[in-house]
Every structure is written in C-alpha cells, then in structure tokens.
Image 1 (tube, helix red, strand yellow):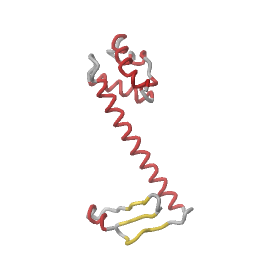
Image 2 (tube, helix red, strand yellow; image 1 turned 45 degrees about the vertical axis):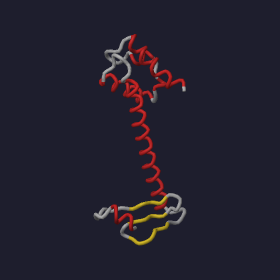
Image 3 (tube, rainbow, N blue to C red; image 1 turned 120 degrees about the horizontal axis):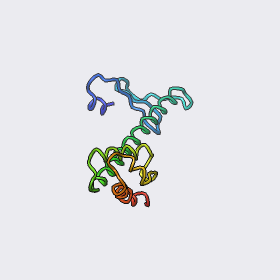
Image 4 (cartoon, rainbow, N blue to C red; image 1 turned 135 degrees about the vertical axis):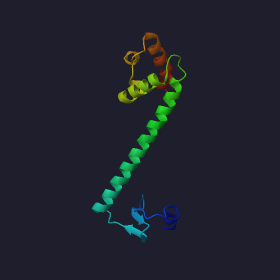
Length: 129
C-alpha cells in the first residue's frame, strides 16, 4: 500500500493482482482481498492478468523481431526504408521469414530476381538456425 501511494499519489483507481498468492491489493483498502479458489471474481481477474501478459509478450516479441530483421535488411544494397517496411509487412503476414520463398519477395514493387535472391539469401541463415 505504501509503495502504491508513493508511486501513484493521484486519485487513480488502481489495483494489483498478486500472482501465486491470488489476492488483490488496492490503494483504497488496507490489506489484501482474498478470493475463494473457485470464485467467478478470481477467475475473471486471472483471465484479465493472463490476457495482459499475453498481449505484452507478443507486443515485445514483435518489436524485437522487427528491430532485428529491419537492421539486417538495412545492410542489403538496393533496399530503402519503404521496401524494408514492405518486406517486414510481408514477413508478419506470412508468420516468419522461414515461411517466405524467394518469389514472395518479387511481389513487392521494385524487387526483381537479383534483389529477391539477395534478400532471400541474406535471411537464410536466420531460417537455418
């Protein structure tokens, strides 16, 4: 409670659900709120927590993946920021760079046989890991 007051002094409705303990803490109540193991309230809080974690993890994985792939693509001569953005969109739509063939890159305007081969070969080590 003290930490919550220090970091959130404004009157913002705030609660924290402690994983493992399965209790709820609030800056408006001293002590923890416990729930029965099979209560609907506990199940709802667990679903909210799990969805928040799933969203945060997938968001950060996507950021890391885009950053790593984008910086690798910048090393390929002939690719500008617009083509890199289109390649990243293609990779995201296909699931990963492992699912993309050389001909998929040629579907992007301005990428022909030679450049699609460079892109494919450049990303190949990532697929072979």
